[in-house]
Length: 432
Image (cartoon, rainbow, N blue to C red; front, side, top):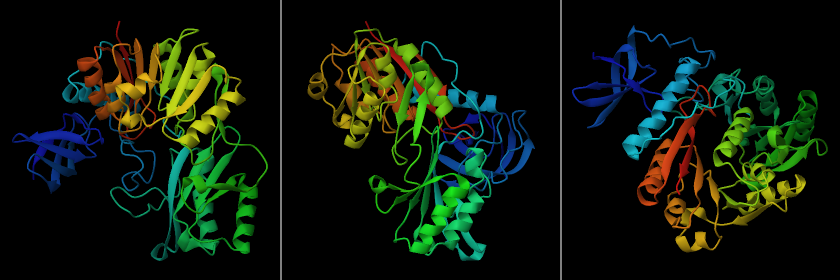
């Protein structure tokens, strides 16, 4: 059985070693460790393996806090010290920028990080009736499986949400549609917690009584979602606080519905917005673009600077919500919104939006290749790029630096998802 020394971690948190020139990804192994492993997936250029014996452990290896670690697929790095997690993610970012994009940041920013536990204000939990388990399971999927993990607690959910896992099992098991409720989406706001029940069949009167009693007892608000995300509606209680999150540094409150996209980690998001605006350095009277603006996470704080902001987003529903938030925060004169497909951006469609002094880009995992390719000679002098995928950031950085004449002035990681291998980052590009 082969033995190897782990060199580093890949983007999925797997240890990397090599055997006869072949890359071996060892699940659960950490940098510096000596492990005996067995491969369960073999390809011509790489293998995926699991640890058989830990010959020499890393000094950064710790005892996972969650009893479900290793079974639940929600976290993959709880066995690695928090500081070492940050360093590993920074290396993933640097490796992607150089090996995929052939670019290096002139400056590495300090990582944005915060509380490693209880941080996840958004979650999509699966619900499944499992007769062999004697009831309903509610939680994340098991690692590399469609099975739902038998979770009784979750360390990354807020404690009051984690405490609902077992009561929710009992509730769903008591419903007439327990076979037809595959998902519960959780959204925690400043003043309320919403639970969105994905229902594939109508509730009975008895079901409704059970839901109302549960909501009263546990101080939650139930939404029902009979079809797609847009079909979700508030069921009970109808009156009371609305979902929102705040950015106190900018005196901003964003209202949102439980199925609309918001960052899962509100604490880190506050620091991220502060860092993004400091890097972009908006000035009063300037015209700034917020591309992939969502419901206005960055554009409303940018408006507070006195700059004129155009937020652009492909979803008409999110643009509508962003415009409502602008009015609610008294920023309708500073911030406006437009619907556009930025994945199909061209020099002509981008030019039609007018000149921008600065630009913020916050795309989904696919990145913003079409958008950055469309920037012309009259493009913004500064671009702050917030990324949730280091590979597409590296690709887009190649376009900005190699073809558009920008400099990659700095980059750093955002630990939006502690104890997972997920890497978010922020980068600053400038040109004269």
